[in-house]
Length: 563
Ligand code: GLC
Ligand code: CA
Image (cartoon, rainbow, N blue to C red; front, side):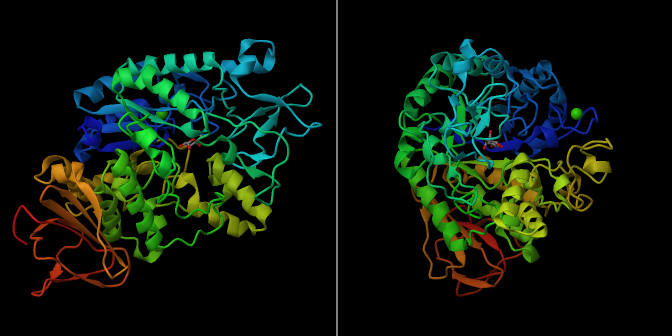
């Protein structure tokens, strides 16, 4: 497998609305990002992925785009974006933008034309269909709950399709003109010198349109839409076409939000795949049942976690390259998901960092993760902005949960947990903004948990991430940590998670206690060097028995020095 710049990179994901507010209107913006580039550089990350900043009514955090060529006023101007690209370039940081082409906003001119001028060519840019006696043409459930069909205003028995919210009508990819418009738009941005794109919800673009009433899989009488629109036969033609026309000639880095079944992974990330890498959901969505209902517990265990991570690693390395992540703007904070509340501390935060950063693939760190930011507890539903949180709350009530229980469930899983403003320092609103009207609550733990305090503390979570990145990029271990094979290691003790990275005769061993109880492990003679560990010392005795304290992690190597 060939070496590539994007395999050697570490990505920092920015949620612009919450990163840094430069004009103190309560909303983060592009100039804010520019002012924090040296922080990103200090961490050691060299690519940023910025969530959508295009013109949008913000029904779904900007994933509802009304003009692909315009930066939304709340984030700044197109010139600000040019400046960001310029400044990032000076610092050797590449920029990825978000590409949202399964759907547009209902406020996009194409959709407005389609609605108000049904005879125009734009009608066919979307998916319109007559209903069945005034009811939707089928009983598909949109991803965010409720029917995936919305009645067209002022037209009788007519509906349009939306896999996400009703303000996100799905584009009709069967229409060649639609595809041409999209490719031209992608090239417009790539020509500006972007490093590439993160590609949103792309597996949904091909629809197997079937009408009627299908067997329901929920209390609402509806059926999961994914069965008809995820990864449908024929999608490969457009994915290939898109790559040939846009990404390939630009030599872009592309990471697709695409939970691809193992048997099709080759097409996506193989030698001639559609993308550089894809995001796997198997271990980040481990806490949600298949139905996607946040209020039902999936009862996951660390044995499942190990199986899911290791399987994904093995399959991915067999085919191509992977994207590693524990957090993003659609997930709650990883520390709250994976670690019991009473054990949330810097040790367990560093253990999680060790676990994912040293796997094989390109790591993606989501803003605030490098500080160990945690979930926020909202007192009422009104405090949440996220559209998915509101629909999940409604579903929980329909299911029969009491309001307190429904609130508890959304507090645990809400996407707003990771969208709270970045915690920079101890000043008002954590230094994010001086506004009295910040768009989403700041986590009240910012006086203790903020970047300023962590930058100067050598033992901080931030500095631990920095060291991990340094090991991966600028140490004698970098070739193993980047290009080395991933090897699962079996141990009788289920409570320790172990894996190796190997390149020729060089081996790095990662040892992780994923429990709150003490564990033992005998370290093989060949491992003589400690790369990084999360406690102040290491409890290794004469017989090479290692005592692992709660959530302790140690990384060893068979070269480089003496233990
Ligand atoms: C992706 C985005 C998510 C958005 C959805 C619809 O999953 O990550 O934030 O809600 O697509 O565009
Ligand atoms: Ca602002």
